[in-house]
Length: 296
Image (cartoon, rainbow, N blue to C red; front, side, top):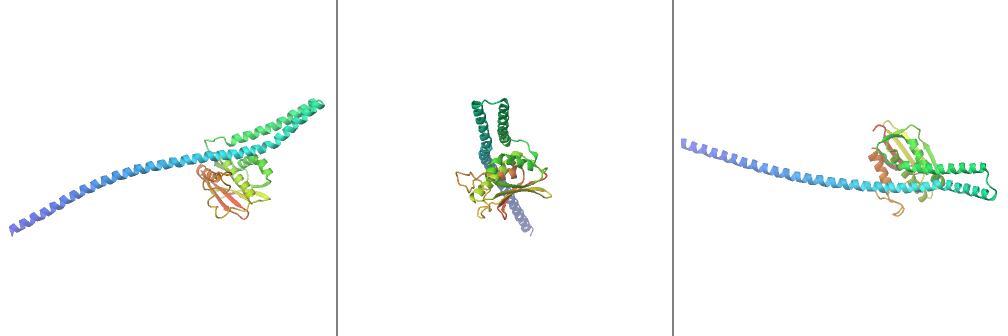
């Protein structure tokens, strides 16, 4: 029995040693697999970070390109509006010069007439110079954000568009008090408003609206200011209303519109001002809402 017990213990010890050896081998194998897994994850993570960086850089480049196109498009609209602004004063200046020339040539102009000519010419030239200043300030880059008055910003845009609005017989109804200040870049916000005016003008034209009207107001909530920009052009087709903020989406055709105005307007409001730009159909037409937080 003693010999048998000894052999039994030897077998148990051998089994334990075998289990221990197997456990050590298994542990070593697990550690090896873990290290290999960590290396694989590290390579994948490095590759993923590289891909993310490339994609982010690509998106930034595309956004910068779109912003440049948007600025050029807006500048084109501004130049068109400046040409409208200049038509009437240039015509008046031409008449003033002709009247003075013929009066001087036929009758001989008096000192009073010379002074009148000088005064009228100076007023008209000053007006055109002011228009150019408005244009320059509108595109002057702003590095720092600042608080600006919504009503004053709207009036600056409308001053630039005044001749065009008058020519197209667009009625503007404003319900915005002075002193509503929001934080951001005033010229970028003005470019968004200019784009909304431009889209409304296109809608009036495409839908043959005779009595054109815009309703612009600000609603104040506990946390936000909501600027509402509504036209009476009949609204946006339900099949495309969810697409109008997509880049390069346009209903005006390739030659007439680049389809980036509303996309960039949304980017400006959401990225630069941390707000929202939304659209829906009202009973009269399309209603755009710019929602900006009171506290940034």
